[in-house]
Length: 292
Image (cartoon, rainbow, N blue to C red; front, side, top):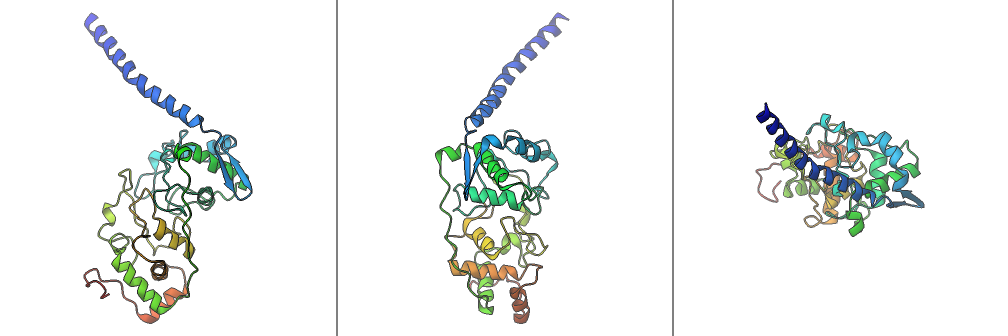
């Protein structure tokens, strides 16, 4: 009995020693976050205040993103990839949807647009029912989770040149770009997210992630206008396998690629009609370079 009691005492003592640094780290993390409670956002003429966003965050966001903004809310375990993408870890300060170059922080407007727009094929709904002030406050709240906004400034938004007229030649040129930069490896030759690399894709945290399926009617996560799709090519989706192609394709080639990708989408478009008239075939991965 005495031996068992001694073992139990040693076990509890060891557990207390192990638990203490973990608790300390959690407390330090909470304290660190609280030091940035004065964070602000600026959306047009509206200033958002992190300190005012605690109630709406608790009501609408904490279940997924967690009280510490680390993506570990009580609902997170039920969002198993790749079908559901797990909640964003705001502490990392890494975001998919940005108007800024890869590796840089998004603008306040980028975060505001993401909250407003929501994300198709995820549990993140549109929050356009909240007032502009509430959404601006939530942007500031999101920012207060990461120290990156203390030491860094958002990147300078990329410039998007005027959209050219859609032509058959541009669609064919976009097909060449699609083949050359090997979009088909993830998205498949018909944009169905079934390329040879699709089953191996992981995000930066090593979790499975799906390529975007252009054919299933989903809205691209970062917006569905031609300008939004162009922006995705040139900024990349940080935290995912989707890189920036700013150093690989020219602006006019990016527009060609936008037009070609429209031929995959289920929505009616001039691009789809032109592709039908051209009897455009999918790219051939085995074709020599420049001979699609």
